[in-house]
Image (cartoon, rainbow, N blue to C red):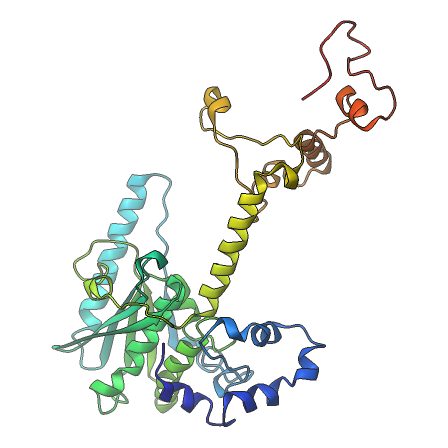
Length: 367
């Protein structure tokens, strides 16, 4: 969580939070509009991280990515390969390239190298997230960390970048003589969003970063930012920092909540409640056919029931694709609503004989 002074500076143009909200979204307008911003204010009691609907870094055509896109170099190379051996070779080659880049950027008088990392303990541990960073310049090395509140990994990783950049003012009198800033992170989300000043869960950390980078980029047309993605590895330079993982900050009674963390908590609660109700016949009906899944089809009868999910057509819709007829057949099978003898007798429609009329003396038509 940022210090109050950071939020105070960000809100200086509008005075205080209440005035800020009323100016940009009065209550009568909020009742008529729907947008990410309106949804944010409607649930403002769920989070502690302030957001700005308008800021000077987000003006159309004035964003850093718009004014100097050629001076923001994204070195993001994902490890790919058909086999594990191919992926191992690709990772080795990638780390060799990163080590060469780091060796140059960490020892040059005109460069600053920053490696960031974050630790997000389980909520049950009672600890909050930690955002940590290491900074190199010539022969000088600095490290620091700060608390990240209750957050998801994307929040904490972006928090680490914002903290590292804002901490440069504590180390250097001025960075105008620095020509290149190299940032190394294992989070593609943080690297993609660290310059995005729009409304999202990590906006406050982005504004903190832009407060350092924007004037620095405007100062000299030769200033450049390099964003390097580091794959998960055990390299002695880029291995996950012990500073982040070994630092323990208790959550306490009232830790800060990020927007993404609050959303995840709500989603987890809804999914847990859905899963609990899913096993009740009062919810799914007396004749619901619970699907089972097993890697080995021979063990299908012993497999556990599939739990419900809302992601990407889970749990079953993903298997029927875009076929309407197959979807209809699946629903009939799961709910026992197919036009068979058992269904006709149950709902007293048509011929209520459970046996198949074409199979004299055969078994009842059931699933």
